[in-house]
Image (cartoon, rainbow, N blue to C red; front, top):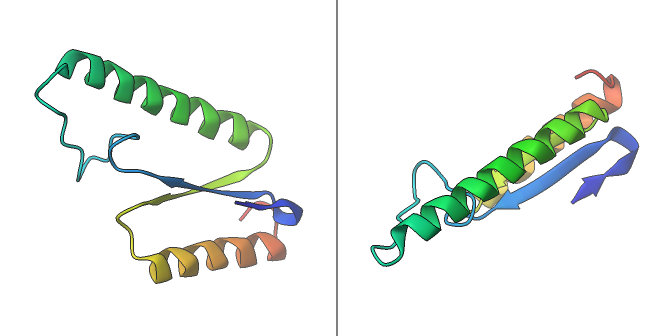
Length: 88
């Protein structure tokens, strides 16, 4: 989700695919493959965060386990702050 005028990008991450520290449970079968796959996803996430920051965007990460109302409040607060000043 993008809020283009204020350069805010929202990404919802799944706990399994993005390696949530709280909820990731790797399968027993083919464990090395899945560890490497999740690490590649984490590495790609970091590259994305860096590229967005360098371009002046603010990335808001919402995890699938987060309360949706709280996530919406967090996003709204960040978007509102960016409307007041671009360096918020």
